[in-house]
Image (cartoon, rainbow, N blue to C red):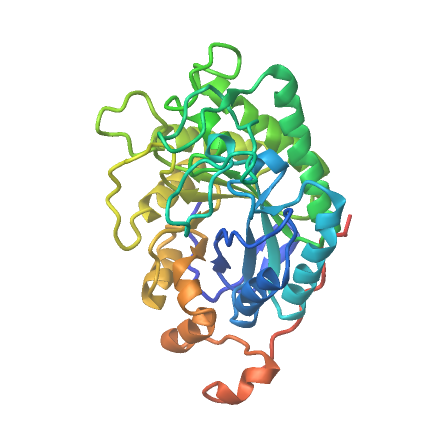
Length: 380
């Protein structure tokens, strides 16, 4: 890919949609659903970020099956009842000028856990609302307080691919414009990619080609039912941060190779994060610490990327886009602190952004209100 000169508030076109700016809400688990159903919390949480000016708002990880949840309070998209509450949210996002994305996920060996704000993070029993059919490529637990998973067999492998495909069909029904497949942070698809968690000896284990097989099958199933005019993202962890001698692992070289394959399968953007599959990994956390991975994937695999990880200042985010390190900037904690960060960032950078008409009197000078997004999820 060649680096074009853009900035944080320049539009970004992927297939049939054009985001009004390069700011996206990163998927952030809220652990506030019951039976996988979105509720008023999700509407207000996601909707306020649209009001705040984000060009793309991506939901938290939505489990493609009940056993694919991290906790019993995860969002889900495994049945028809979950569509209408999500459609309520996408309609609001569109009304306020943002495109709507959903992250499809399976927690793998990190499933059936307590919510993170409980005093002790531990496996939940069936009596407590957990489940025993925790799945992984191999029966290797993540840590001592996590469940021992069951190795996925051939029948379950087919069910997993089907679950992602049918979840995609529901996402279309719910009015989403972007689907992101979650293959990062030590969850199921990342577990298959990494030799740390994948100790299989069949066609899904061993070589890079074999370890990538399930993700590519999922991508093909999703792309096969997701409209050609709508973009498909994949989130990856570019490295396991296993440089301390933890054994063969997933790294940046393999991430570039995978991203190249994903581009050939119709993936439009790789959302580049890191870590999550090695308990106790030593990660050099600091401002923008994951951005170099997004830049390398973008440059070497020639595919658009999103950058994440301790991006907090407008000047920092703008520099990432201007320098061609990434095409999108995904914000998480900073948007929890300030849902209106895009509006404030535009002022700080001297860029133009439209405010909601209800808030225009708070803007420094009158600006046009944000036009609604035409719902694109049901187009051919």
